[in-house]
Length: 217
Image (cartoon, rainbow, N blue to C red):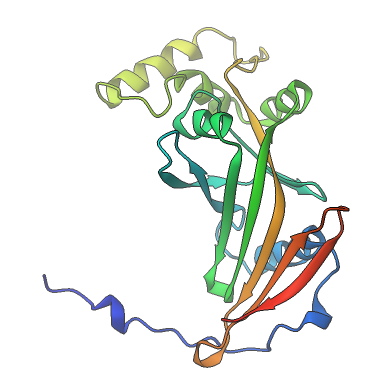
């Protein structure tokens, strides 16, 4: 095939190095600082993250999802609980997420366990979504399962669009909700010149505090 050789695609990383003295003591405080900078940089969808879970077969599986909130306890994202990732996370709550902010020579990796959000949290976020997204959640009840064609999906959407009047509140499907990724490990990576990258890993200690260590690039 006639195409660009991926091995020749090299991008130099230039800029100030990352130092331990410049990091916050809590990883989610540091995440907040970096997320704000990613947003301010104009990066497209800085809340997009690659979420990896473990299938019942033991095979890892990754996909891109949108992070919809964070605080000192971790990250929040929403999905269909009966989807492939939803079922995998219910069977094995171990997960990891990567924010690939390569345009600003950074990435963040979080690993830990997931837990379901409360019905109150799920209802509150679902009510904040645009009507079209709410209808889409109803139309995609069989998320991750085979469908005949696009026409079937469009038909389902149109059918649900007639169930509720335009001004009527659309309830949250029982199968739809969120997870919180509670990290036990968080790594901050910043690209450096000559592939001498800066990497710092936060590890949760048994008493709930966090230790920080530098990793080799």
